[in-house]
Image (cartoon, rainbow, N blue to C red; front, side, top):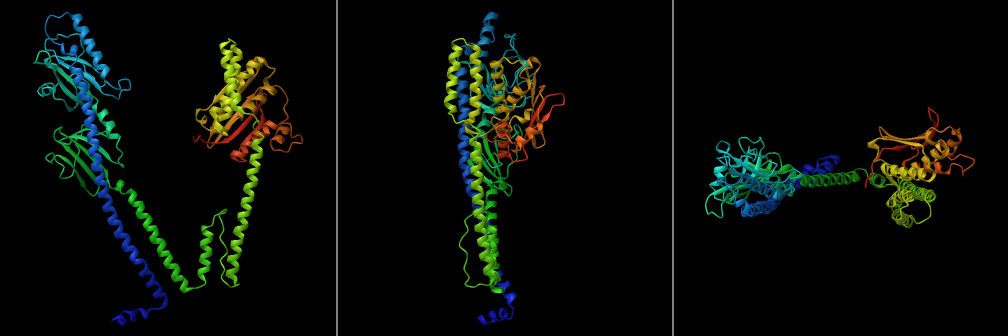
Length: 597
């Protein structure tokens, strides 16, 4: 029997046998992959659904706690003596009625939450006043406003008598409109009749809490479901509050979730959604979780993808084994190819494999490994040289003092000068301390353009205080450029040059214009002055390009140019040119970027 199975295999040629061997190796992996994915999906859905059941119970308890909090507040309001003394008959003076009305109005307003934001809940009292005893009070209720409203017989809300019949029992009620004369605004309300405590009988009115969907919605949004939806409904599936804009709508549920379901939590899994429904017949409410199956299985799909990658890798491994028997010389070349694909410049190079021969393949392998080692040495040498160059250049850009101590000392001098009445000196110290603060920048080398402009503005004010300069400074800063990154202390030396070599002796005729614009992916900052002195732009260009025969001259602008090159590359930097209407303009070119902090 075994020979009958082997004979057909023996008749196959070598290539066909290798293909058959490859299929035998890979087939079990494919079968196990499909079965494992199916079982993992079913187990994941069941475990996650059970977790949502427990989460639903906790969420419902939180909602009931919020409703109970509102109920306790209504109890406190109902027990207020002034509210209990409210009646719509008798010969009480109008002034006393007005005072009582205003007192109750303030009482309800004090319990309303979020009135200043417009997203809280609002307590209102609705009183049936058939004889128009409180004729001066408004009868136009608003959803987002607390107050007291009196209604005649023709103006009575449709829900008023229904609430009174509950004899002080509060419950949630969805209203399309608060009263016949109110505006058409849907809202979830908590209604409760206000019974007269002192008289022992009769009803003062109905206490209505509007915008309950906002309060309950906060509890619903605190629960994170993967692309899921949460609904609080009545027993007829009418939405009272939700994480969507479905308030007042009737949602559909799969079979088994009708109002006759037993008390408690149950779950249903369909092809598209997972439903978790908590039925509470005592409150006549349902808490429904609706989670898309695809969103739930997204993480499981990632696991599937990993398994598929493993399967493909296994298939490739089997193919390599087959190829080894097909052509023995392919094995060392495949190892070499694997090393080349895996190797990244700078990574450690392992020892050169020894094959015991001196053929062309061995020479190729040894040469490749030696070349990788030489490349690593060159990369390390280049990295160290660049690092030392940057450190040396950056060390020359900042003063070797303790700026924190100086900044704190300037702050102390500023306050002392202010207290002693030296206002002008105090202002100069304040601007100087601002310069020090911004130059610190919490150790950052790149700051936002807005911070750099603040630094430049402080410098200008300090110079104007110091020398009584009266030149004009015009700022044309595009708002979208303020968050762009720039090396700190870049603009101040350029503005200093514009002052000293441009408008210093021009008094009120001097003008400096600072402009920033966004051009595609480039930020252009220009500093213009209307100075009258002759400028050697060729000499400036030599200084910027580091070919000047006098390295001390123009050291500041060259440092600025080098710093921009260090941070952003040689395509960016500064340049000088004559101004069209006389004077000089310097342009700073930076890449578009944003502060990542």
